[in-house]
Amino acid sequence: SSSSSSIGGSRSNPPQQSHFQPHPPGTEQQLKDLHLSDARSEDTKGHGLVEGLRTVAATATSAAPHLGAGFSLSSSPSTTSPAAASPPRGDAAAPTAEVASSDPAQAPTGATPPAYKHKMEPGTSHNVPERILFVVDVSAEMKLAPFKDKESRMQHTIAALRMFITIKQRMNRHHSFALALLREQCELLLDFDAPADDLMGIVAGLGGMIGESYGPADLSSVFDVVRQHASEEELQKADLQSVFRVVFIYSRPNIPTLPRTENCERFTSFPGFFFDVVYLHDQPPTHYDPSLVYDFLVRLDKADRYHTYNISNKSKRLYTSLAALLAHPLQRPPLSAVDNSLG
Image 1 (cartoon, rainbow, N blue to C red):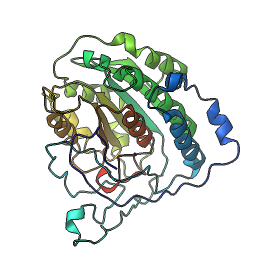
Image 2 (cartoon, rainbow, N blue to C red; image 1 turned 30 degrees about the vertical axis):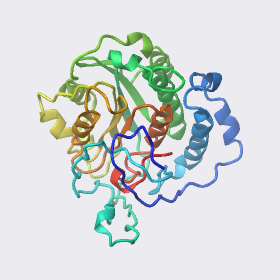
Image 3 (cartoon, rainbow, N blue to C red; image 1 turned 180 degrees about the vertical axis):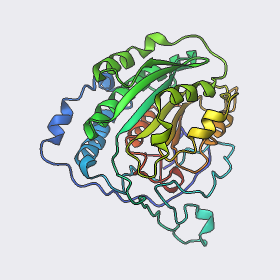
């Protein structure tokens, strides 16, 4: 099924078969203890998404000690491509994966596209710790409320991030998190050494940090923060012991700038670095072209290793996008090879 939150044409891929085992007894009760109050009040936050994410959490929690090459969250075929279709992101496969073919156009008419093939490099662990840097846009656009429940983009973002952090910690307690705000420059707010309770409290207060309607964000400053807190030597190893991931949440009509490219080019070439994007935009037609922003963010990915999602008027898509990002970046297939609509 297609989603009105998408800003582009369609890409149909065969649904990926789940490799999860049924969750063990007791998991559901544990998940009921999660602090999901931000997403529970009066049938808001995406109409039943709490129950959906509990199911995701139960599956992921039970699978976490044994996660292998099949961590995919898929539903019916749809898309997150922009209206002005992005050029192909290249045929290069991720360092930890190979794709037989993911382009339906390459298959004969009526034929089923070849299945995605996942392969871990020898010596690479499936579940090494992640250092996840959340970069959250605090421009005035995050106050907008395009969703049916009339709650703002920031309110939904806060609820989705709190669920993400809680579930991710249950999957692997060695994952660590940092938080940065995106104004015109990226400003680190909380380092990786901060206790999880502090992170959850500050995330809950992000709504009070929204400022003016800033101009284009300087992505160079994001990579400056990355350079200060990531080990380049560690991220270049063939046998990775950890990975560094940016989860970039952006909501402006302006295309970001990249005045200094050296850090971006360096880190995006490392097998242990990932830059995932959630782009919240107005539903076309609008006074700007969201596809131009989307295309710019997609082009940061030179090897089809990062996941980029766009959301306009459906809060459900924000939650399901964050749920998809629960997958470890060394385990997931490239975005071009999977159904990323998640309903």
